[in-house]
Image 1 (cartoon, rainbow, N blue to C red):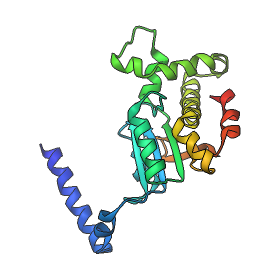
Image 2 (image 1 turned 135 degrees about the vertical axis):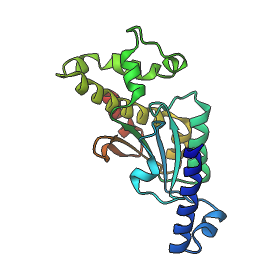
Image 3 (image 1 turned 60 degrees about the vertical axis):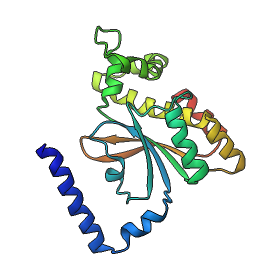
Image 4 (image 1 turned 90 degrees about the vertical axis):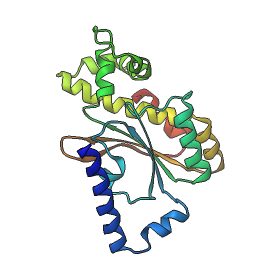
Length: 212
């Protein structure tokens, strides 16, 4: 209960600080949201997308799930994507993975007697990425290197999945937005590293397929 109390106390202090710095801060944001970005990240508590990117309230629309997946049949992520692109008109959609991802680790451990229940079904796409890149991953010298590379490959694959959605295809048919990007957050040093940027059409998306 003390931990919960701390959250409310922190919230009041934050609200007071924001109002002190800008008396109209909350009033302006209460009228509408006009974010520039949609970020699709992992549910991991160490990866707060707004905080690590320095985005202010109202700048970033966010969707998070285990291992930052973009499934063509996931109505949750597709609804978020459609609202962000068609209603909010975001210009940038980022898939943000992170090193040390427990979901990717669980996918790597699958088949070794370490079943985790429902999440095993959720991580099927990560296992498919691992199988497609088996030779590349096996050639890496250490388990950590293979783990880090699979995190990166998973991000690239989810960018390709994004590009294939009807939402993005329809938007691209109108103009060259949204721009799709892939990045990885390093929980060890707090830095965000770009993997791919400014995918704005099928040619660039198709070029990622061998990497994803």
